[in-house]
Image (tube, rainbow, N blue to C red; front, side, top):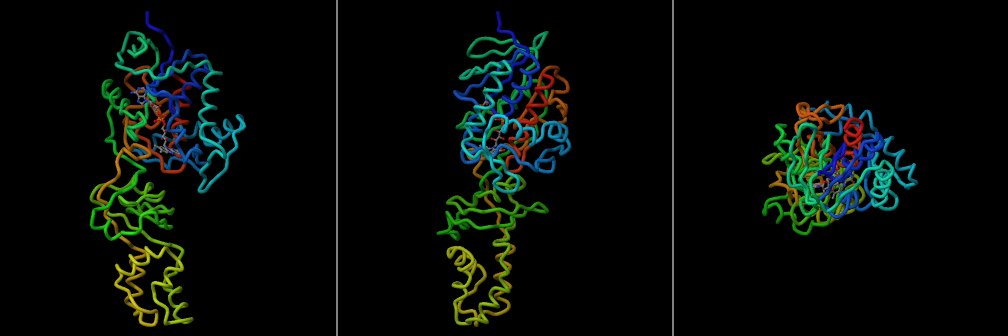
Length: 393
Ligand code: FDA
């Protein structure tokens, strides 16, 4: 006899746990299956261990998808304020770091403990270290073959996330199930990921790894302003992760370094005070010395302020404002925070996350072709899409 449930959810991450809480509250008999030894592993490591659990400004504009309208309904019905209310009900202390990003004061583990408590109270069962070998359609729902025996479910929710960080158990399982049931997949690629540079550019950046600067990074009309970090492989930091979701192989990104610095005014004023100062010395008062060396080298600038021609100032300004970089690639799924693309939203109902042509089948969270910016947006999508499916599954 197969174990019978109303709802089986595969994946005990952010989206799966939220869906379990909501379906359980409706009195559904819920079982959550995960092959990992612990639930919510990505929550645990997120936000440097403090979990950037939502963004108070989250809205459809902060998400990438083939259909930018798809996320609207779910995001409107479960908002950052709703999740914050849950966090506060559990007495978890939080703070806004920057740009609407909300973090735990203590540990991301508090968010996992909160979700597990809510699941228990809603009567949802969690089965860990359990592999799923196959899923088949039956007359009344689905038969799920697991390492712990078969389970029969009326509704099946796939909440197994994307492909990022395979070392943490990411598998691409959701795409396989989607294809098995005839749903389409929007091509997937690593996103929110550090970018790599070719050996020549890396040699030029010698000495810079570890240096961080404020930057406006742009790709076409899209731009972000945050910190950039030079690494041994290329470029990272929040601004690079953001722009990586928009960048494609072979394309350029443009960097505006130190956007608040009025270089022309600063150099003119320093020249009036003391024209004998080396240009490098003056610039190094405003940015890391290693970066100054790179910039003056690129602009062909040397000598003192008094010797600096108007053309050289322009060249320097150009290097600072429009530093064009053609990344060689990205660090890939090994370090990507999320997966762009996924289950095609054309094949899902935007209110419930249900597959349009397969009754009882749902896809939630990162598995779906909805990808947030960096800054708490991806968890907000996980909560909102899990909530949406939990109302009907
Ligand atoms: P998620 O990946 O969380 O969960 C999927 C679950 O399914 C896992 O428990 C996995 O073990 C299980 N699973 C997978 N395949 C399976 C299979 N075949 N059988 C059974 N179980 C299976 N976002 C944000 O908003 N704020 C932040 O601070 C961060 N920080 C961050 C840091 C790092 C290092 C990463 C990698 C990612 C982030 N993110 C983030 C992104 C965020 O973690 C991500 O978008 C959500 O966890 C997605 O939630 P899901 O529930 O969809 O998948």
